Length: 571
Image 1 (cartoon, rainbow, N blue to C red):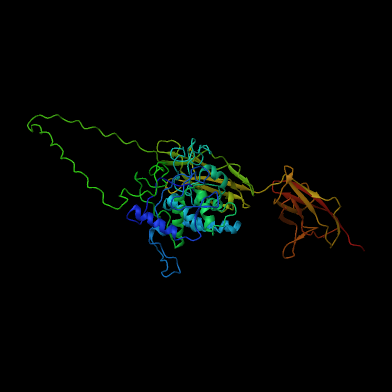
Image 2: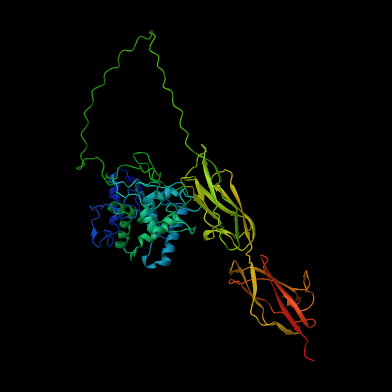
């Protein structure tokens, strides 16, 4: 999506002319049926001298990109004359998390838009051109880049003019927009197309799973069928409206279709350095040369192929002045003191950012969000620190989306808040641990408590007298529990046959329940349904004729006493 930084560099050719010929040859190899077409029409443009429209309609704002061309000796796909080895050429290696994100995006899109026929190799080609596969796979375990990948400010000075649309939330620039993340979305496009590809409850352009899925859906917009060359060209041009960009993506797409292999995260091949010595994806916004220079410009050789004229030799320089008398006193030189380097802020600690008591009823969300504060070695809040929150202990509580582990970056105030924590059905205490990702700094621990659901009232439903002849069963007994007037679902209730005394205890005579073995029991535990209702098991009439009492007690202390009358059998 948004093109990344400065001019493209070419690898695998000894001169720019050879590289240009390689691009032309690879582009030509796609014909027939694959003309370079404009993104806003059905007529193809010429591949050699097509215009490069400007504007901010593209996903990336048509910001400049930075990449190498693939080598001329492309890998062989498994099943061809030479099977791809376990480890192929360095350029065909794609970092594991990045490759997984592309394939997952392809599967997800196929489940909702099968007619698009999105190939993951197209996402890989765009990811290579935009960010060198997230700087060679420098992502954490959740697929989020270890540091932001930002394009230059789109301030109209050689780039499209796109004023700030996100108040700097994604790109840190509150004046102009910048392309963000491994697939280089501009914030305004991300606001429309952003996805949650890794189901962590967030749409983060810096996460490769989120960005790859968003890119896939963007490329499939409308009724495109990416198995058709014309639709694929339109999709790529909608990403960055440049014929040169299309040819570069096409070249990598063809290369990856020949075969790839997985490499560990962080070990992917990055483009060679630009003239400024800057690698793509450093986030400085000053990568490479001005985009106004043509990325396909030829070297300064004579068009006719004749050798350049021999330069006129320069006259010899004047001899150095006569040295001073070595015996003289000479003028002492006072050395200029080297100033002490100003230390850069570094992460020194993470600490609790004022998180209060963590308590929730089973099945409910914790009202308090867990927060940490990252501090620098100067004692100041530190932004862009990756913090990992982990739920620890014997519990079924989890963060939004069912995640036990999530990673969040601190904001400008140095704080990071974990997603909403939800209690499960298991009661008791557990721990949440927050650590600065990838460091050995002490963790911050939080104790959380899950309490059982409660009811503050319970009442029998139905008014008919409960009467049964000894040896028979009573009609079903039903009741409903509530909490603050609302249904109290899944609340524990204990039913007990009690004596008629000032301090009643369990009655060992009269009506009873039965357990799984069919034995009489006079205490029985169960839970209410989701709507707070309950139906007691069968109650058997027994003992002498008379009135007996059944007490229902809820978790929370609410009680109701129900009378059961046993009648003597007929003579």
